[in-house]
Image (tube, rainbow, N blue to C red; front, side):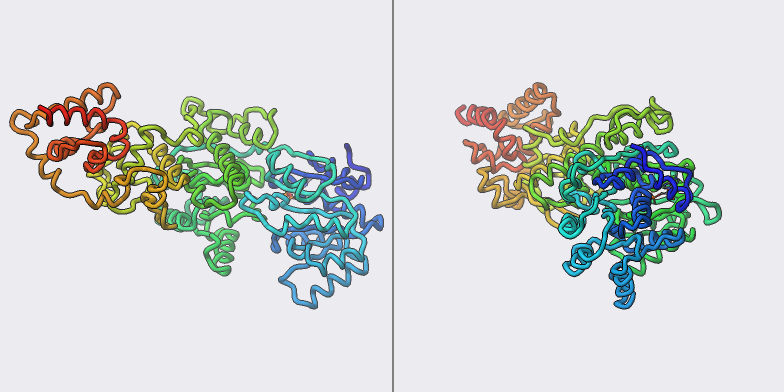
Length: 623
Ligand code: ADP
């Protein structure tokens, strides 16, 4: 579909462009033909023109005012100023204006003088405003940033769900525009806004000047080194030359810490997040705009409507919650068309962070959507496939060519497929039981990552400080992936077998009441941990005489664990530790209940090895 002639004249005469860009012509033609439209163009793709051109064409034919719903006041004021600069009669109604200014705009609207009127979504659905709309000629309704209807997006705006109400008072085509849409979200927009057989326009999402890359890092120190290296490579040291960088973090605390570290590394860095005062945020943004800070470390609060041409680098210090969010934020690089880099620093723990941030709100369907979004970003990070291709395919363009710029295209040897972890992450069977048993043995709550390190046998300081070096299960999962253990803990939390407490530094503990209800043995409750005494440990030393284990029973128990270890391909101490042998030797348990009271065994091992252990003990008792 080509746009009618009048439109071409407006593009050239009013907006000063040679012609339409990909997608714009189709969108404009649909609206001018009175049809609804759903327009998905990448950031910088030229969405505004899609409604501004029909707005001007219609107004100049006497067709009335175009109503534009826009979520950010700063954004609408920029647009109004730009339109006025081109001789278009535009105005905005928003809560920043005093009553006189609002009255003036309303009078102009009622007099049919406005070609374009911008309003906030809150204003658009006010009964008084709808009554006003019913009295004037509206040529079209444009909904900017229409993905704000999506409840799982981070830009969700509840008022957006009510915008379909405009249909009650306005008979005009509606055009919904966004940069962030997958087929599912697009369907959601069409439904929420009650679009009627919309003409769908999907632009070209490829960004030929952007170089995408992924680095896999677990520790913050490694990530920091990567950020510093990337800023260095982008020539961002000092305040002299052009160019700037945005570093996105998932949490406010992290944003502050990363900004501080960058400052210490000699970069002019500021930070921006929603926890700062409006004044501090504005200052941070102004320093960045003015080039006094060249690196802005921010949460996702920094973004919508932000447009700096010369962002040479966007680093994600942690993975965001979806590829849509990633592409939108990364897409703020290179708006001037010059080369720019987008670096994602990825660790599977980032997905856990996202789960924690998003909480359990929204019920099963929302959680499933969230998991799908996380799985997509996990795949992006782990697949050895052209990053640009993966991103374009995610937005529905399956025919994009390999970009020849991203890390996969340029250094294929350095980038290989990594196993996808999201779905398969959690351990099951014995390993899961071991994790649960370990949590049961905690003397006090600890962080999930620290516990995971302990289970893998780490002797790191954090593990020591948390008192986990003598956890019976210390080292019991030496072969498991740390992320997999953390995912297992998360699964146990979801199943309510384990509780997570605290927001800033969440710790885990066994869910006592729930455990009892789910029928797990009582020995798995934390009480058992407090019942542990030094006695078995003291005896451990007595176990070995000059010739090794002193009692017959102890030697047999040791043999049993060696045999089991061989069968299971475990280390002997993973089956049970020497002090368990000492305790068994001393206590001579006769049944599983008694076994459960042996420090260091735990329900999983009693379940698994209990019969054999009891058989050995019985043999010696009978003898
Ligand atoms: P979006 O809202 O999709 O992020 P904008 O509407 O702000 O993008 O447009 C981005 C830039 O592209 C603006 O500077 C605009 O002037 C320019 N632009 C839009 N359409 C055209 C066109 N057809 N030809 C040339 N430049 C265009």
